[in-house]
Amino acid sequence: MIILLSNDDGYNANGIKVLSKSLDQIARVIFCAPMKNHSGSSSSLSLRKDISVKQIEKDVFVVNGTPADTVHLGLSGFLDVTPDLVVSGINF
Image 1 (cartoon, rainbow, N blue to C red):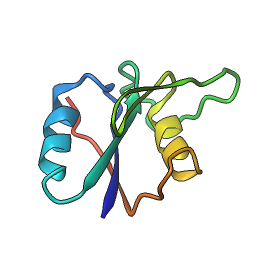
Image 2 (image 1 turned 135 degrees about the horizontal axis):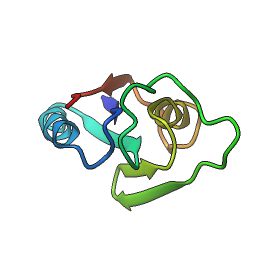
Image 3 (image 1 turned 60 degrees about the vertical axis):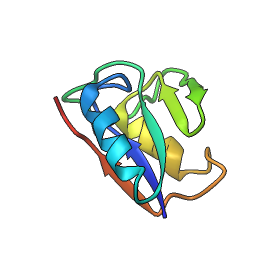
Image 4 (image 1 turned 90 degrees about the vertical axis):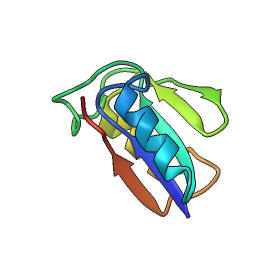
């Protein structure tokens, strides 16, 4: 099983790190999260700006966009695999 993991608090938030470590015990986790905190804007897309993605380690990607951008990228062919499940959280 492959899980796409995202959040709206940013890739460096403690909650997503704990969740990633827990899910990693049952599946391959691809961590794709915003560069910074975007609480309250989780369903908005970046329509008028360029989005960049930086891979910081195996299966860990940081996006300079919104939480929805990260999930959209993960489900629209950006990755070399198709996730079976999307998990979002844990919020601060």
